[in-house]
Amino acid sequence: MGGNEQNFVNNAFETNWISPLGPHVDGFEADLASYTGSKHVAALSAGTAAIHLALILLGVERGDEVICSSFTFSASANPIAYQGAIPVFIDCEESTWNMSPVALEEALKDRIAKGKKPKAVIDVHLYGMPSHMDEIVEVCERYDVPLIEDAAEALGSRYKGKHMGTFGVLGILSFNGNKIITTSGGGALMSDNEALISKARFLATQARDNAPHYQHSHIGYNYRLSNIAAAIGRGQMQVLDDRVKARRANYDRYQRFFASVPGIRPGPSEPEGMFSNRWLSTIRVNPAETGGLTREDIRLGLLEENIESRPLWKPMHLQPVFEGSPYYGDRTSEKLFDDGLCLPCGSNLSEEEWQRIEESLERIVQGKAVVAAG
Ligand SMILES: *Cc1c(COP(=O)(O)O)cnc(C)c1O
Image (cartoon, helix red, strand yellow):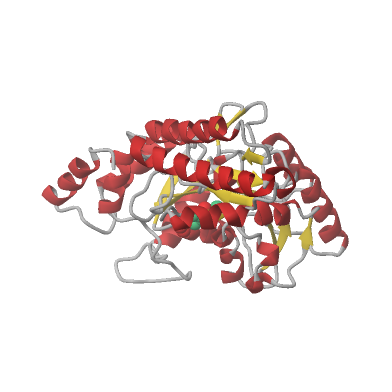
């Protein structure tokens, strides 16, 4: 927390605006709109809920196909299954670790040739890195398939100066506890199309028709953010840019640390025109160049020091739950899952914690070098 969240929450208590909704929800939506440049924003209970509503708004129904990045967290793809639709997974490119525009076009061509034009494309900006938006948007427009941007990990990231989540027909954000800012749990749906966002608000509050009694002509959802959670969000918006700075500094520090270690490379550097919030700091480990040291050696070595690190996301096309789903690409994500690691990179790492991490990494890297030399 940055400090001011408590004041916003106190204000909610003093004015007795607890839930549902309230002035902080409106304020948080306005803050998000002015920060990202999106014209309309609906604050929701989760990023997952935002993706689910996006699919409903685009008319995704049972048996439809929806294209989705394979290299991502399962929440990007689960809402496709909520709708009874079929995910079509696209692998990533080396330069951003995001959806390959080449594989996307290949998939669109092939699905359309098979008589199954996908209803939407969900493109994820993984670990905060923007996708190649010029190419992705161009392909989606050429094949006339609406784009949903999953910017859950990319608040604060920009492509050619424009915020992630504002390129597609719809964009989603997450304020889960692990994201760059948090409302303890929450998400948002963004669009320049006012009708879509007002329909999202309607569906997210149980789809109540305009009548004095409770009348329903649509299936509704309980997906709105509470006034208390939004109060936390308003305070978090004041420190968002500091969080981005801290995360970027983490990446830079790891980059300096590993510069002299052969075979260990930090996650992708920013292609031209891209600005990443560096939500997570990652590395790839090539045992052929490290003297045999693997990703798992590093992960387990850190664990011995009680320092947690994690393999990169396991691609969706390898997940048991999505087995048999169509897949397009060159298996880049499988290599990343094999040799990639997320390192400690909270926005609040202290200098002592950094020293512990660096000393542990030093020992792990040196130890292996000695063994290899011996
Ligand atoms: C966190 C996350 C989500 C889901 O957001 P929640 O708010 O946790 O529901 C979706 N997609 C990606 C890529 C995420 O990292």
